[in-house]
Image (cartoon, rainbow, N blue to C red; front, top):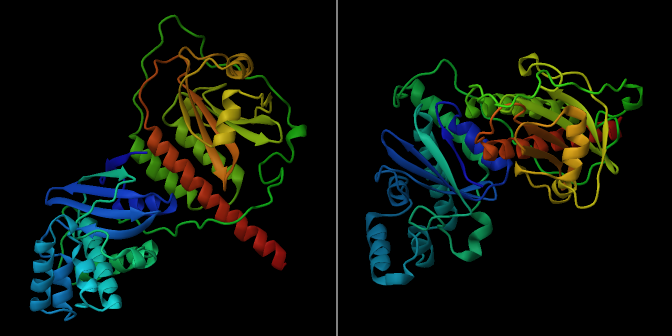
Length: 406
């Protein structure tokens, strides 16, 4: 899944936290006025950096720290030059020739990454792109031999916190200047850890009082027209995602998390609906743009149920946990869901799963209503849903552990 955006709308702190919490592997390239910087991620952990400034490289850092001498660096560079196609990265070369201590080399790598992040923190304008499943091979990546692979992945939270500390100290001392000052810098978030299996009750899913809800068949706010209107301009997707991330950090229940996803999707699509997965059916929760204008926000609980038929589109999403965004004429979708909320003018639909571990606990359905289908940032929505799943998994785990202690 490609992932890109603008630093003006999503800070590098939020980007790093998102990649860590969703356990991404790849090379994040950040391009600004000064040049290009890269950070390498392996399963969400930072394991390398490439600074645009040649003075901020591993060899220079190790010399300035007194870890190696200029002669040691020159010898390692000469070995690299003679290696031809078997050329090893610099730190690997230093380690294999006993020119540097392993722990000191590790600290040099950490320092390089921290200084690289500090530099990016001063950039208020620029773009970023993640090249998924790609780890570039150069002197600033994959430093260690294979036997040290486990030690290569640095704690993202630790590195990020140290980088923020260094940034604050240098800014206080006037050693660095932001390109463009904002009123407030985003604070780092603590990524939600992955936990084991959790016991999920009807109350956890917000279905405890479902039988008492008066079911009302929704009516669409506007009759279908022969000529659908163009999609109205809405907020920038990156800004929508940033706002959602802030709310998800504070969410403590599944219904609350599902509602945040609903609002996020509803800010991009004219119609959106939460469907909770329960036993062998989907239960319609709240919707946006279903029985009122989208600007009215989430409506009341709808309460109708959809059976999970074998081979249906919804069953596929629940079984595989994969996002779906395409045109569909699925029987369950067309006959039962669209029979309840009226069919959209265009068959292009989104089905975004919210997973707790490997289990899909709800999906957010969306379509374009009477409007013309357009391209939407499904990669950002997928990342938001992954982050939501990890955050609520952590919250539920902590709640259950606290209940056991009581």
